[in-house]
Image (tube, rainbow, N blue to C red; front, side, top):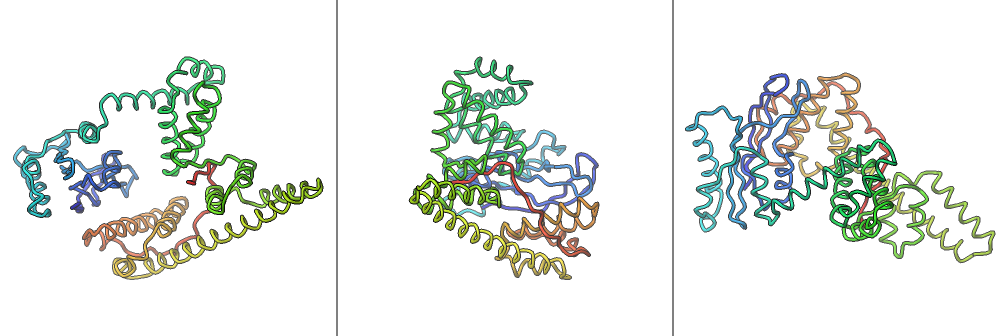
Length: 404
């Protein structure tokens, strides 16, 4: 089973020492943990002094009982005596073996293969998944080509590049490009998501295979990308059932403002004047349904954010925030972390560094408790800040992505 502990970290930028949660046993059959590890997102922490991102150079053990894998990452920059390093790896192996039922303990777990870098270890894991070196090279080539397209200085250069690489712009390429769009969107980088999506649109239009490939990719993964109110209205009119309408309302929620409903009303008036009463009636029913679903979404969001805001206030106003978090752990959800992040950003914007650090500590403490970690040292430092939480800032993303 995965084990998380607190380890001291020395910031690579300002040399400040602080403590951070650290997973030293990685279960390869845990999809979220495996993905975070392979993408280099696991065990990273932010320095409370300068904000630099760090990863402690401490050995960790990756295992996959189904694929019979046991791999140890012993970073090359580790300045440890060989005997001490071997003892740390032995302790990790013993921790894993002792956590498993006797019938699952196999010899390969007692003799894990060692790697000096995350990159080399990730390649071994991917190879066990059937992802070959050739596939990795293809992905790297696709990423390089996307970057080349993004850096084209003008339209003429971009068109020439597309012509040169037209044969490479196939289904696999657009599948990879779409994955980059989704990753940027989910990571909160709306500017990058918008730029990549714009590139995808241009490439699909100007390449031989692009239009068909994009349609297949979007159909396969159920991706719904809405660029404008006109497109949203067109898709809503073409929707065949209430579930599809609800999915469109969710994906294009921020597009559903006064101007959208004015366009819809104008369209109703035009069809009525032209004598097309059947279409006019259908559009009125659509308008009522969209308004109803939108109101439901807004009420659900309002209730969730209000509940999360009250919980955060309770944590901050308590002399023992750790106890409140323990008692209300089952109420911690995405809305709580959204409110928390909004307050951290607002404190940083105002230059209130102590408040931002205190709120950040609350976030670290909450995450650790959700993962069942004993963070007594960090709990002592998590004193409530003097100011109440602010309202979350309103956000209107530039690109609207949902699933059908």
